[in-house]
Image (cartoon, rainbow, N blue to C red):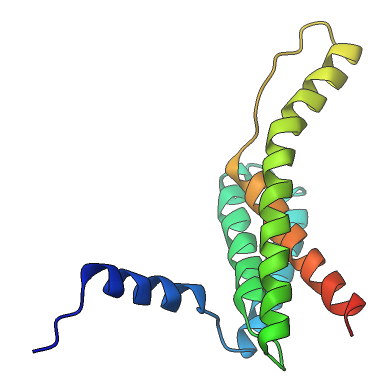
Amino acid sequence: MNKESFCDKERRKLEKMNKFQLAHQFKRIGYIVAIGAFILMIGRKYIDNSEWIRPILQAILLVGLLLVSLAKDNEEDEFIDTLRSQSYRLAFLLAIVYSLLQPLVNYGVGILFDENEVLKGFNYFQVLFFMLIVQLLFFWQLKRFNQ
């Protein structure tokens, strides 16, 4: 009887999660979902009493961007995998910097124009949207530079 250690099982699960990617056709679905949600968010501005739909459209937009981010490229190899990993790392670091500095910048600008400005953060949508957009832009740029 071959018993596998707990650490080996956990390592296999982590490797499996690390290699997780969606099929290439999800990239197109993600674009359609993200662009559709973005257009609806713009259209929502012209409808009265539509504030309740805003978080729903934001979530749909994030799901669309996530589908694009997780979908494989046409030619997925180790080099593309490395570029994808670099873009995630850069996006994560920039999102942290953005999360720390943006409230301070907003506060500073607010103080310049309004004496009663208070320091406030921002919501999860801004951070996640920023992170996904930055990851996709870095990935496309890294791919373009290395072709």
